[in-house]
Image 1 (cartoon, rainbow, N blue to C red):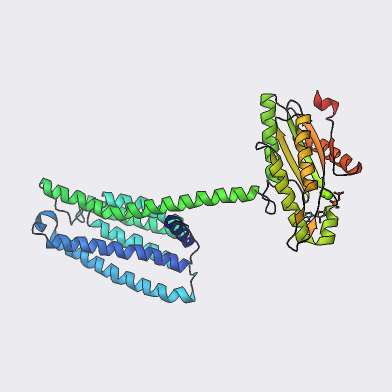
Image 2 (cartoon, rainbow, N blue to C red; image 1 turned 180 degrees about the vertical axis):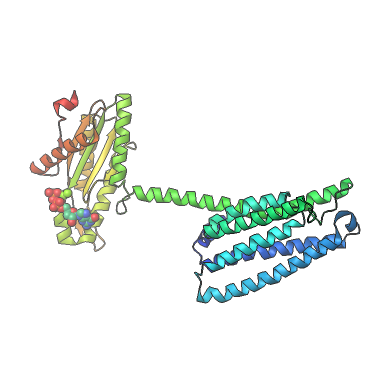
Length: 387
Ligand code: GH3
Ligand code: MG
Ligand code: MG
């Protein structure tokens, strides 16, 4: 398995993690974020032109607050480590961590302006991330809290109660403009990267899983053929196509002969193997465009598009002979043989209803059984239906 697929599997597994572990993921993302901001702060403080770029006293104040957030975050992580063992499914932990995430980030973001690019990215992106991973009510609560806080801060600065973006010294020259553009990208980048990657991986994984589930829901587990639902869907589709193009369509129901005897004599697992082998023989002896399904216990349906009765009969005769001639060796090294009886019906111009065709094929199958089994009988469509 490629490294990428492994990573996707691991990320997908995170969906099944306990509530506390999911909360820990949030803290695992938040704390490095604060360290990133602190690093930025130290870098700016170390610059000679810092007074042209930032309001140093506000920056130091915000950095102190971020330091406090890291310590608080550490305490929450400590609590998580304790809870993980004893109450791994405590939903409260997700609420606490996501609220802490939203509230502390909103306050921190105030420094660079509540209407800035990183705030927009975080406000839109984090709930997406949250909805994928954690309890949706926790995400709603955190998002609304963040919105209210940002709204209050914006309002307070718009009426002059507090300054807007107090860290930022309005860019005077090109160099400080560039500095602030780069800084905003630097603040937004982790959100963009993590959220885009996470969304891509999760959605790809869901698409893969959906395709797998759809495949499973249409496949018979024992034989790998279409299951009953799927072969009946295929019949409806092929009937529609035959009617549109005025082409013939043949339908066959076949039933293994004396199958109960095989089960009774050799056991159910041997019976299962006979079913698997029969399915393989049928699949290998029809055309690529024909469809084979397991219609019932030991009954199969074959749909042969574009085949009139004579052509279908030829295909089925080959299937019948191959099946009767096959020697099936069971796991216990018993050699078994099986035959089948076939009921065929052909709709010459594709205007029939599925249930009519099935009924006629069933009757032909019954006749094949009556006439000695291991044979093909062709059913006649009722007069009204052929008209
Ligand atoms: P006939 O020639 O008239 O069709 O006789 P038969 O014995 O084949 O017919 P019957 O309908 O009496 O028996 C069908 C048997 O198929 C009964 C059931 O136990 C068996 N069967 C159905 N599904 C499965 C399966 O998935 N595995 C196995 N091993 N047996 C199955
Ligand atoms: Mg049978
Ligand atoms: Mg049967």
